[in-house]
Image (tube, rainbow, N blue to C red):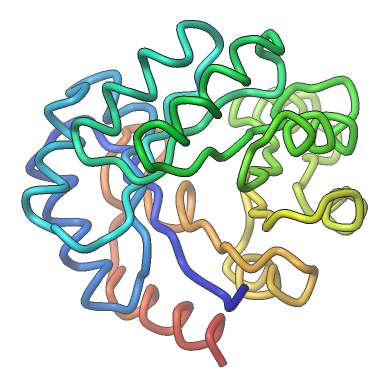
Length: 226
């Protein structure tokens, strides 16, 4: 799979999500993610708005599904999502339901290993149950809590190579990456590069980061696709 760049729209208003998405696509971003904060704030309306404005762009709905998998995936597919996210921690039947919905409605399923006992086992479980992609994810609260105790903040790069080697499907690494680390992800075997907090989104306020974000995004996209 050739390297692609996905922006996580972890925002809480449709207007800001649309304006940030427009800027990101100008800069060379390939996929849009309706982040969990946007889905919590705007639900299906946020996904529909993205689809209406960007009819040909892949849209990931970061549902973090734990139950009711078929219905959640069906609803997001109907709103225009091309990808949905289910958690490795979910019951096996939930993951199977999301995968079935993906087949029924022509969308792909991304399995997120956040919080699983071992990240590699979580990734393998998701692939074995039919997920099309693995999201190798160190969570926001986990990173901040560990850092607040003065300990080394974990990074998805810690286990990334082991996760990539354990599965056959494409992998993306998520969670507190620096610009340099994000750019390096394809070299570690993770071709789906996700740009979110703190690179593009102010994680404390769920708003677009300050500064010349478009130039930064353009540079990152160019480097990733070199």
